[in-house]
Length: 389
Image (cartoon, helix red, strand yellow):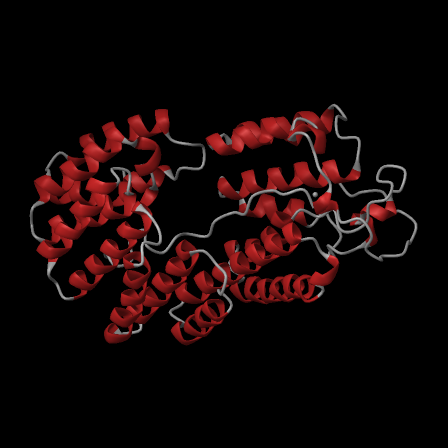
């Protein structure tokens, strides 16, 4: 993988479950006017929102996706989910786990068990007044809407995914267009969702090198970023610069990256922002095949933050391009040993195994040792095929 691509473009992330929340019983038709927004309802803990939700959240944080499947199955079998929104909340965790484990067909089959219309009255709080007095609105977790859009692409139907994401973006913007009825907290949450959906759409277009669409979407986000934090603005500008580089507009990328330097020079942002500036400089050096200068920039990043996986990975790649395989391998091996939680991802493992193949005759034995170590420390969703054994 080229260093200009490695780790700078984040893979599709899965949004967190938030409390909006087999087929639910059909309720009688009711009015859909909004009154008490469920997002405004305070909960003392996650477990107040849904049965043992904190346990599911903890398992997800650890990457214990198989344990989540077991926990959801037990809760369903033992009839521990007593309210409609609990079924949807557990379904969401179940779908995330299936998706993380790359069981996409199973995830789609489970999603198909729901009504095709996620805005059906079946999924409204006001349809169950005995459970939710004085609460109205949708109980569908936002992650469920996101997965409904994302999953078709996992089975090869990219156009369906794009269509659903643009529909989801319209849904989010409708919520924001009626923001006078929402609290400040809700407005900010829906704005974050809008950015998340747009970034996902950008990722899909970028994977097919549809750069013009990507540039338009990113510039639209930048145009709406007034009032955003310096970190958020810098992330958007960096994304714009990366697309400009892939589009061949190096001068435009330099100008964009200089805007981020301006934010840092104004004293805005900490180590993360400073490292972003250095990584951007390094990418420009890489494009110019000045790998020595790129390594220097990455060293500065690593000195500031020893867990900067992007800088560590790309430094190793630059050393490989300089034909210093021994040092490039040491960089990745030392990082995996020192900060495994930050460094253990498929991109880094693929690159390390590629270096082993170039450097050693007995690379199969070395990769097998690495694979055995990974099997002990990696989360359930780690792709074991990245060791290329």
